[in-house]
Structure formats: structure tokens, C-alpha cells
Length: 196
Image (tube, rainbow, N blue to C red; front, side, top):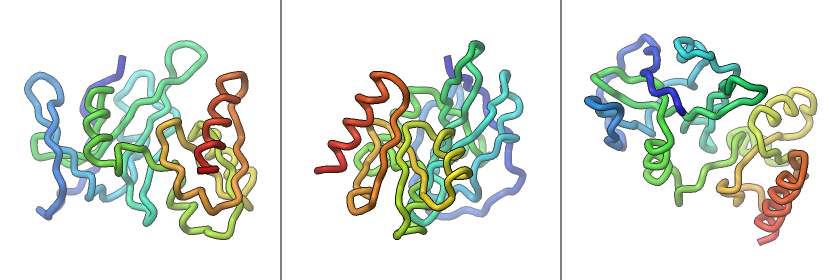
């Protein structure tokens, strides 16, 4: 079950500006306005240090120019694994900051904000900045980040089954599957999408 407590503010008040605002119910008596065009900075782990267990990593999805779109927290699930918790930038009660959103809220944001309702590739900004580099495609943001540190000559990206892979169509891409049959199936699906 996702945590739905509000995030800690980032500390600075922002002036009014034009933005696409998506009104969404957030809790019983609050309204969260998602402001997809205005995050002043990436979300940070200390924005969510009130959570228990605390997230161990945050992965920020960005557009081609590097503007943050949304974040994914990597939170221990109480066992040996991790769960994903989505975060979006918005306003509630006059406070603009990064907020946790539950699955229902995320579905509404995704349909309204992301082109065609498809998630972008994680690392799209790096991909755009390095047009001549070969690409390693993973299925987990955490793995892509570790691989980027270990293999700096490549651009490492990740995506899910719903990711739009158009940006990879003209690139030299190596797909690095997760282990097991599910990993193989996902990798074959991504390879078929790239061939189109």
C-alpha cells in the first residue's frame, strides 16, 4: 500500500506563472494540483525522510531538455525487495513541492501529462545530450544508474513495457535483460518495438 503523507517543502516560495494544472483529489479533504511544467529542481531523498522505511534511491524522469517530469522512489518493502513509489510536483494548500501519489493518482497524471500516456525512457536527457554514444537499455532505473557509473562510455537508460522507445530507433542499442523468463520476454518485446 503506497504511503500518502505530504512531502516536505523545498523551502522557496515561487511566483505565479502560467502552467498546465491538473486538479486531483489527494486525501479526504485536500486537492493536489499537479503542475507538470514548473518543477524548480529534481526531487531529493531528504524531501521524503519522513517515510518509514525511508527510500534508498530516487530516479527522476526528465524530458529531452532535462526538465524533471516525475520521480520514482525505491523503498524497501519490508522483505528482501523494493517497491516503487511515484512522486510528482504540485501544489496543495498553497505549498508547491514534490508529493507522493498513489496508483490511482499516478494513472490520472500519466494520462494527462505524458505524451500518449506513455512513460518516457529513464535517461532521456542523457540520451539526447550524447547522440553518438551507444546505448545500454535496462528494465530497472537503479541498474541503469549503477551501469552508467561502471560503463561511462555508454548511455544507460531504462524503460518499462509502456515506455515509448521512439528515441532509440536510430541508435546502436544493446538490451540487457533482467534474469529469468520474464526478463527474456521483456527484452524480446523491447527488441520487437525497436524493429518497428
